[in-house]
Length: 155
Ligand code: FES
Image 1 (spheres, protein in one colour):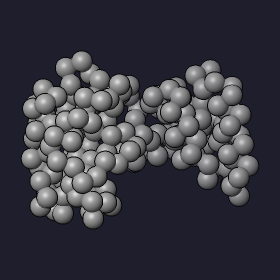
Image 2 (cartoon, protein in one colour):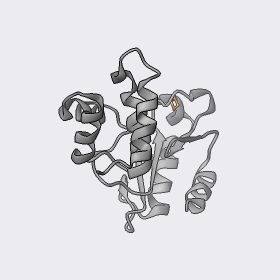
Image 3 (cartoon, rainbow, N blue to C red):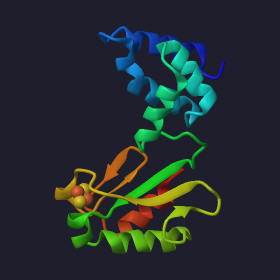
């Protein structure tokens, strides 16, 4: 078993909150990823058994949403929003400066594999441009120096 018994019990409780247990798949995926870091095919098979669906149906969800990962990941994901409002307020300079600060060639993983730097389109916080997200937390009204400090504070 890849998914701990305690986590499976939490998932069963989640299922009880929905008219159809399949409705709990997204929160279950979040919970499992929080525990294991990614959703490998073996994990998908166990989840599929819990939900009484096919493993491919679990992997379709994992592969559709960019917040789920099917392979081991760096400890931190940093995404700078580069859509128009953020770009007009300097997001592209923030992204370029962070790449230099982290020693990443444009976008990708740091040499130690600890941080992934990338860009995303609008994250829905345009009024606070420029902004970026670190994992699932937003950081807004940034400039390059503030963004660099954020990187230096990552554990
Ligand atoms: S354009 Fe950056 S959050 Fe909308």
